[in-house]
Length: 334
Ligand code: SIN
View (spheres, rainbow, N blue to C red):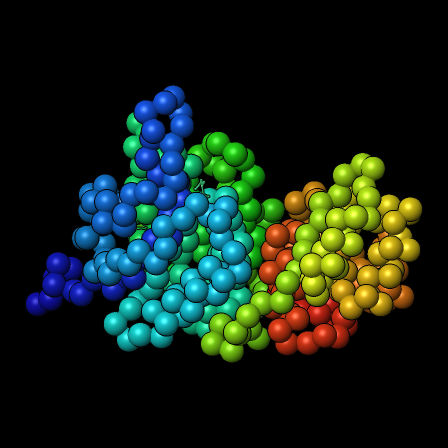
């Protein structure tokens, strides 16, 4: 009779990209350098990992996630999609710096055409810290990626015993271990070493997304400007001059535009630039035609997407259409 010990372990590809999870202290107080420990060291720090899964590790890059550009995003998505397409891979775990983890996760969520689990994780403390969180986060990420119930849920972010959807999650604290949160709540948690689910995502993703990394050569430039009192038009003009095809306005409250900048914003469409109204608040929808005439100005309301994710969705949308109405429909759908 076959025992649990005989049953084949799930085959998980582990892609390391750097970040604090691979960070090491410099010996001066709390200072450390991100992205120095190689993937083999991350695995060696987690007892029991090999019992959970048959791991195939790869050092895709070794960078601080602040250094992620669109070309890194494309490289990561192509590699994850290629791994997911293989018969000998059951799931993928990506270790990533926490600073832009939510952006990479969302990009993969929209562009990797696979139902296999893809899980991102990182750490708030470097690998050399007294109570490093990287090893347990990695253990949990592999446990989630290896579990059959994780398939078809979109790209997941596992941090601090919680499982978040890449559609919703954001880093909301600079230091604490519970630095990641989702406005609509986590999808689930890691309980006794296995995923336990509380809810499912309603919006399309991965295999049901219109954006397939296999058909994307490059991303159009999309800028982002955060609102503040005494806002001026120069940052918007600078993005236009840089060749941006869209600008995400992280507006006050529900995506509000200052009255004294209204004409400049209305003029963006005539200059070939799509205005996407998001919010600097971090939760809640921006409603079309509320506080701004989106119909008249050809602009787009970002629904409940935060500004960094709105940048990515706008860029992906512009690879498919130039029509503001169609881009709006994508924001309401994804
Ligand atoms: C990074 O994002 O690469 C550094 C910070 C972190 O991982 O927490």
